[in-house]
Length: 279
Image (cartoon, rainbow, N blue to C red; front, side, top):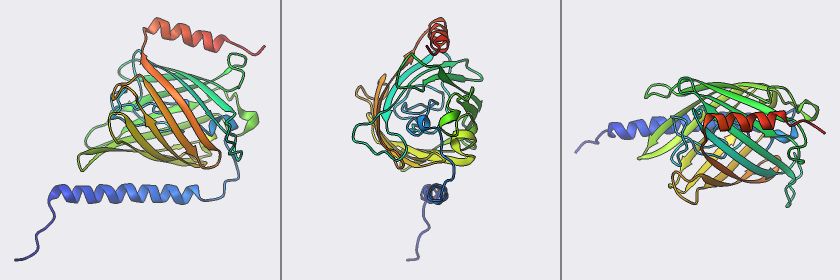
């Protein structure tokens, strides 16, 4: 009896795997090259951008089966009334301390439905509420479809608050696509950015292992990062606890709270944060 061809589903699996492996290989090669510039020390642990520490689906909603990254954005952009508060602590470049001292706080809010727009204010000082904030924005341009990825553009540190400690103000474009492999979701994110992304491509993959746990791997233009994200209450848990490792700065840990707030409340919180100035 002659050999039988692989089923079409298996062929799609093989091709998808090869594409993903090729992308990761390119990012790995880029990540191992010497880097003359460095990003701001505040931007080596967690991105104040969509998907960073919070799993999000293609509709921009909190979803444990969605895409998640650590220090790069995903293209799935939160929309109307989505709100989040993230608190992370990590290390400075090259420190690798057992007692992380590089703290970060981010308040994020989504607006609109078509397009969806995300704004965030990132605390860039260990003295919370004492110094002005880095402002960030992302706009979703296209929705994901079977034939194309979701695409978004954005800016991190729009007002260049952290230029004194490294590359800061950034503009970027990013695409995210979900692949179904053996009945499981695998998310691939690829982008390119200036400033803190060091005028380099960035990218990552993430996968929900269960409704409670996701894993991710990424290259953020400066370093390779890996993390696990745990949702105590399951798929739609408002709380996410993240444990990660940044290859040039070490351990990073954090918690994220997310849910929905009225637009007026979002605006009031945002105005209060932006209005707080240096003493």
